Length: 114
Length: 111
Image (cartoon, rainbow over the protein chains, first blue to last red):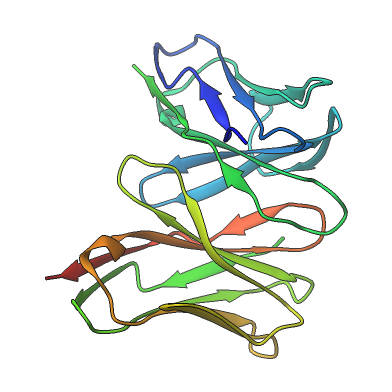
């Protein structure tokens, strides 16, 4: 099976702009989670989508939003970008049943905000 | 919510020695504990995981132990090799696929 893919791999934006990142899960996986990774902060959970519904949400401001499509692909949007949003954004997919199962990560999108 | 603490933040060992990384968690409802290895510039990869109904799990040179009473779990790597050098993350999750990660341990294996 093909792994989790993310596009684009690299982005450079300026403050105030918005950005949309895309994640395609492993075939058959219905859950997609998003994480922000910054040096020293580890991986911070943004949100999780399952069957087109946001099922879990981390402690990020409303500028961070997402959605999931019927084919389980997911997008994440960040509006009004700030310098502090510069990070590696990782998505991870899993089967998504009621039992917590293994998450498989994509390669990430490196976002730089100037 | 859950809080996962990971120690040490950096660890250097001689090739062939053992490495131990420890994590504590706060939510007694957490029941799934994966460990990920992230090499520089690459995605995190699952290396081993354990569920709360098991105390220890081993896969070749890697083992994980879980102490539910004390709310801590540890990663043990024996006979370390230079290719074990990476950042290791622990995580904890309750049912529902919400994961909380530790801040990572940068392991360096010195040849």
